[in-house]
Length: 472
Image (cartoon, rainbow, N blue to C red; front, side, top):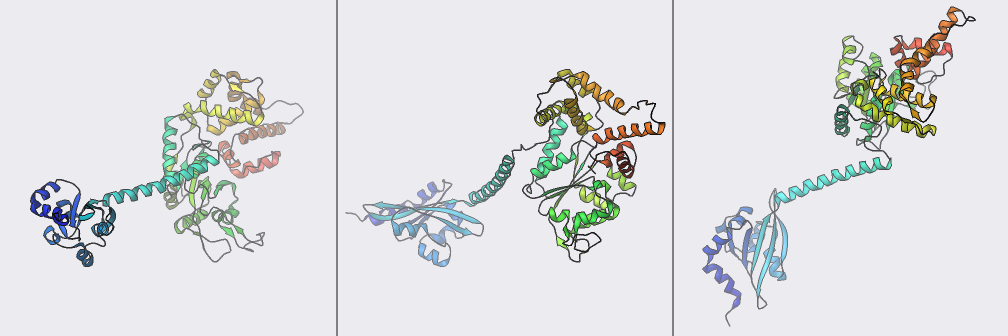
């Protein structure tokens, strides 16, 4: 019987050119060795993946090539040893990898040769790395969404809108929420700047870390620095014997929301700028700095560019804060948001006060026609007031008109009382007016802006008339 061990090798030798031409039509590397590991045939695709030419490979044994370092291991030699299919990943060059499968040809239990297929998987491995990175990102997003779900909050909880302008704004806020940069939110009083800051925080990578909110206008000037940066024990008269952590320390690794940023004094602006630049704070009365990792979201209803021109706000601080600007439009410029907002407020107050109120269609139209100088806060206050003071389960257009166009007049107009002097009746009118404005304002500072007086005057009037008010 003819020796079968050399039959296949002989066939390759006798038909070498024709076989090579055929195998070069295949976009897969083909590397054939005999039963000892000697190279018989290498097609063009296989030559591309290595560093040696065809003439340098033909006749060479894989054992030699391994010793010379051409390859680190051989699928052919592994298949010869096991007489079964073997696969390896071969590092052929610094940035390239080839997936090699060695398939033995066995006849009558005798191994004749090994046919190796070679596939360049460099791009595949890169894609794998990209997919793994995307998988990590997706898992991070899943954790964030799970956090929101656990908090029972939809992604834009608190942001009720229908207008295209707000839709665009929310989409932008969603994108920038994931960036580790400062954000400056501007807009008229009552437009929802704090809501937007909370939205950005909840959708950021810091959403499981502290979110510290502070109204800069509500802190007395002599306490601002110690509130922001804390103080060491004995730093000043009245200081706690244990010292105190400041807002930056409390917000470390989280987010600090600075509302009414435009009301900070020039000296405090300078210190805040340094903290943003250096990312470290020093407590009042301290001698050592403490590193802090805090994302800052600032908000103001003041025109900071005008304040810069007037010398009231530092230009360098403005540019540090204004990296990502968000301007919230007034309610009168997006009146299509009024219906969903008022529906949401009614739902809230129905739950709060155990009511079943609903609003008539023509009543909503009256709300749409009003200019809302106090924006969303005014809309919410009016809605609550109507629900508490009106009869019946339906809110009517007449009830709304009364509140919007007559309530302020009726509540503030002086009533003639023969038993009171002119001075006493003027005081009563002033008290009624102040109570009304305070009820529609977020703070005493904001009320001072509406009435065009300074904050100190508002504080004195509150004390004078014994008005119960504690919102700063």
